[in-house]
Figure 1 (cartoon, rainbow, N blue to C red):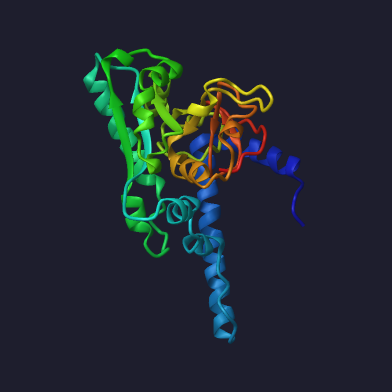
Figure 2 (figure 1 turned 90 degrees about the horizontal axis):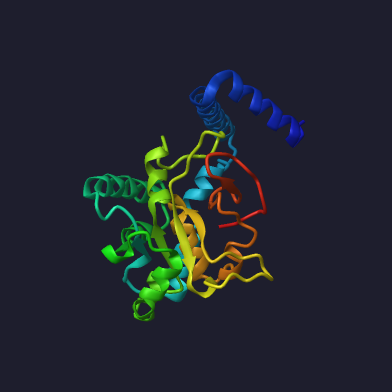
Length: 273
């Protein structure tokens, strides 16, 4: 019999308090390893008895075509690049700090794609993912709206697979999140987790839509950009709904289907990415 959700939460909170962040994460990792070992053992017994191997969730995930690949095949066929345009609005006077940030950003992007996937052609698709950086000293301290106004003609000429309907911004706060995060692609286990993020700015939402509670921009985990691209490119969810109900201190995540508060866990409206 499984425990009610509130009892599970209470048990996990007690474990976090007793073991600390690193101890709790190690406990969860060990439990996962033990579970996988048990599944392998049970499969071996089943096969030896003449039964068929049962695919695990991990094995099924490795064969599942991700949303971004489906969107590319349907809406952007070919071998062109796909990804996001990102504007730098900070640290024009500190090249060393920016270089350190870029190394951390690249590490997150590299780990974003599942290297264990066995979907045919996915390695080539992932290789074509591109971040087009726009660096302009006049953007130092610029707001997302000021970026949109200054580069309105640029967006009209952006390739479709680079999503001209949405761009990203790295400002001082989002840059700092990369330095504050102890794990660059964290699973948000605890209230101490800090997730590296950027600002996502839908051009169609520069004027917030009060009917949907949408915002002119929102925070997105950089480790979730592949899924965000798939959501937008496939019209899986209207742009005006992506930020509906979000607050400034929340981050859009793909894998969990939830939004998390910066530096702390907070479930809000369900979010599938």
